Image (cartoon, rainbow, N blue to C red; front, side, top):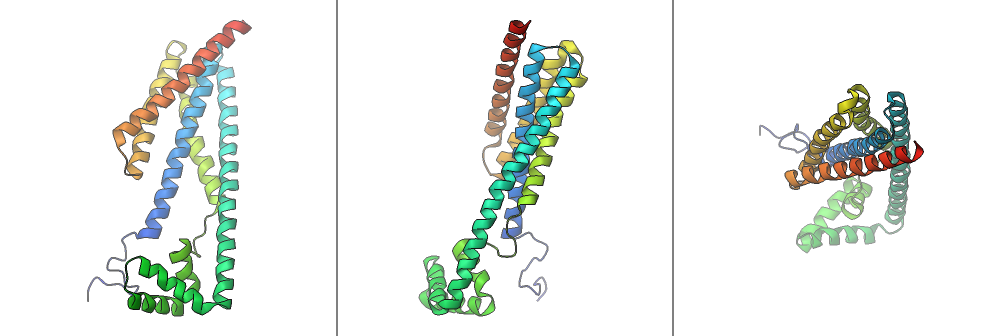
Length: 242
């Protein structure tokens, strides 16, 4: 019959649950990383702008904040995802051992999982039997552990994505405050940051099926508060030092 692929999917080009979920998670992480880069760097450079009008000082502070923030994001993501990957591997090793030493009990456990999902006892047993005959580790990993053995999380990918997204986000306020004329420097940076945060808030809410307008306004509000506080601190610091 037309439209049915060899793999049994009626639409072979349509993204399915695992692929789509993974891509959305990566995209959401990228948006949040860019958002962090925008807010933290904007707060830093606006704070420095409150203390000094020296463009070189602003540029050096912004670059230092960008590098430190990007490396911190990458390192934190690497450690976090490495821990997650180690946990996944440990769970898979335990599952392999249980499948070797107690295959019958594991098959009954798998049948019980599908029975709790709503299948009849007979059908659940048949499904468990067929999946176990085909690939027992995959069957148990996906149903019991929610892990795809062939697509474990990659700490290097996570670190690289976090570093890149943070850097892209941080470049916006850095360029805005160093390339605009002195009289409108802070206002121009604030406007550019507000637009960018509105976009990242909208996109992150869209990916999570949350209210978009509220998320955008909340995102802009947090950024505005951050810049306002750091600017006042910079003014007070500059006055005290001067």
